[in-house]
Image (cartoon, rainbow, N blue to C red; front, side, top):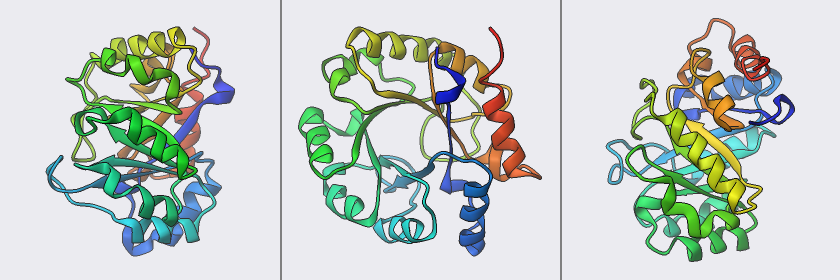
Length: 225
């Protein structure tokens, strides 16, 4: 389990209002968000099309929050250089699209970004055993990727426990992130299972007071167990 002091809330840009992006980013920053999660989708690996390097560059100019860039794309290595240059702090790639995962993680590190790996709901934690020690971030998808606003898959909690055990066994200092259906009702179980970083899109942006929602999510990770 993680200490409350290390909890990170990473609102997802997928749920932002692009007509008022500058205001939304300022609101997140003032509201205590730790990271900004940027979902990059190519319409091939997942059935949606979202952001490119230009959006990352725009966000970098508008906020001081670290940009946590989640590459839901085939051949992710094609994006590393341009996204790193655009201002990504973390580049996270899917095991399912990375047959040369170790080499790709090392390239991300060479570019000066944190290197993360993602596993879909049907992908076993064990697939990361041989690179666990090299990770800066392990992201467990608690929904099937491609769309925002989906419901949390309950079996993800046990999977988070296994992911935490894997990182501990490898002596890894990687952060353990969860993405999908994170709300006040689901975040505590994920935190108790060992996660320390939480992507929250719909929960934050649909709230009447997004800053208060960020605080409420963080508070759910400070409960006495």
